[in-house]
Length: 110
Picture (cartoon, rainbow, N blue to C red):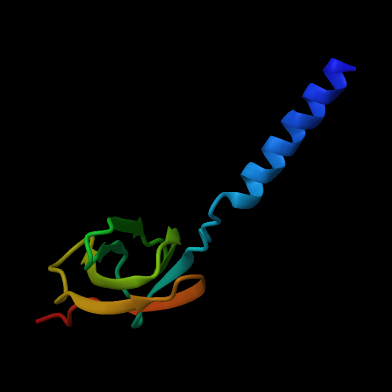
């Protein structure tokens, strides 16, 4: 019976530990990027957290790409086309979870 008591005690300690452990919601957003305009160039989209939380990026293919696991917050958004200069960066708010579509545009040709 000592083995059974040890098993029950271990189960009790694990259960209490799980119930007392703080729970953290790790729900991040899926960002779907779309380049606006007809014959829009492909390029790299870079999201830089304004609060210093990291950088996320994707390479567009036929004007779209996806970035999984982006924490909610304010981001500096830059589109770097494969050919030509980057447009001026802008700021975007990403929600803490769900799917958000982010539209970017290439600078107009001279």
